[in-house]
Amino acid sequence: MPQQLLHLVLGGRLKDPSGVEFEDLSKVDVVGVYPNYAEAEKAWRSKAQATVDDAQTRYFVVHLHRLLDPATDASKG
Image (spheres, rainbow, N blue to C red):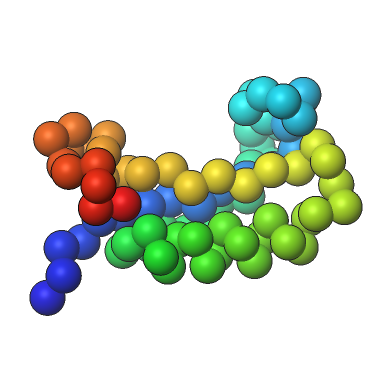
C-alpha cells in the first residue's frame, strides 16, 4: 500500500490576486483532504477551471504531510 501523503485543497476570493490573503475567511471553500498529490490536483484543477473567469478567486493545494511531518521526503509530492 502506498504511503499516505495528505493534501488539502482550499480556495476563495483574495484581497489581491497577486497575494494569498483571503477577503473573508468565513467564505473560504475547503474542498477536501486527499491521500496524495494526484487526487488533490484533480480536485484543485476542477475548482480552478470552474472559477477561471474570476481573477480574484484562487485555489491552492496545501501539502499537509509536510506540516505534520517536516522530515517527509519533498520529492514524494
